[in-house]
Amino acid sequence: MTLFPPGFSWGASTSAHQIEGGNVASDWWYLEHAPGTFVTEPSGDACDSYHRWREDLALLAGAGFNAYRFSIEWARIEPAPGAFSMAQLDHYRTMIETALELGLRPLVTLHHFTNPAWLGAMGGWAHPDAPKLFARYAATVAPILAGVEHVCLINEPNMVALFPVLQQGGVAALGKELPAIDQASAQGLIAGHDAARAVLRDALPDARLGWSVAAQTYHPAPGAEELAAVYQAESEDLFYTASAGDDWIGVQAYTCRRVKAEDGALLPDPRWDAKRTITGWEYYPAALAECVRRVHAFTGLPIIVTENGIATADDTERIAYTQAALDGLAEAMKDGVDVRGYFHWSLLDNYEWGSFDPTFGLVAVDRQTFVRTPKPSLAWLGGLAPENHLDPAISPSTPPETTNPIASSTAERN
Image 1 (cartoon, helix red, strand yellow):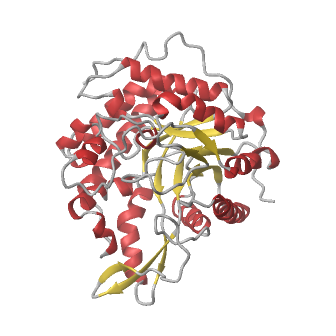
Image 2 (cartoon, one colour):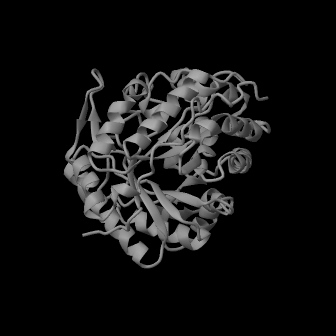
């Protein structure tokens, strides 16, 4: 039996845009409806979790989990520059309070891929003002984060820095030479991370701050080793280096990346006989252990697995994949890798950035009625928490008493 220590955070992850629905003020909503977009279908109502979030939390807590990672939506909180919604701040504060009351430690992500549409129109993270605008947003949401132990500043900045490139070349770019990230966006993300961290250090001295990176385990063909190392340094290690000074780092791993070199370029080199998931990724549960070992060696920071999972319609396959990934994670921990939590992607079958077809969820969601149907994997994975000595008494108590957590925030910061 895979064992994890007392105090280990055991949960599932979601992101606001992928489950809430109706995120009309975001740049992704605009992209989904733009003519000629590479997005095959819009998010629409998604899982209607903006209204059904209590049910989602109850499913997670009822299955035995002790933690929940979710994001708050910048586009809802600041739909126009400098115009902050007290109602939306109160909405997310209520989610945090309810999670705590249910014994779920909230790991709150401030930015999960989406920007307010007005920031997207400015050029997104490549705009020189983006870091200070993100810091202003962080200062505004700080009061509602009272009682939150872990805050993820930005989800997968290395993927966010790739978006401008993919939008220019479409998803077809992924099947050709591995694209380089947009350096202007990368530097904006790093500066935004630093600025928001400084703000939250002052506002929330007890919170543990970090960000999550899309970690890759590269398997280069002979002769491609040097190119793969350079590519990884430029697209991934850059963000590990920027994590110096953080309290933890999030690792998000799903599969391996096989690459080859042709004419000095690094290209995908898929194994055509490999078992594959709905996304087309190679079935490779060992990716998680390989990634956490590398990130541990590179950063020395405590690690939280903020995403790991598989897109499959076969829940038996989901359980087998996850068990193998957890076994590898446990072995890495025995070897001294400091891992503090595991969050499965995803709690729900949700919108996967262009399509609802990839089903990563522990819970199925009917697209018409939004009825939630837990899969066997929910009970199985949740059941590991008490079996693996995760003491519910370790869960934080209810948040500090405040009559109005957002009353002291200033909606006119500029």
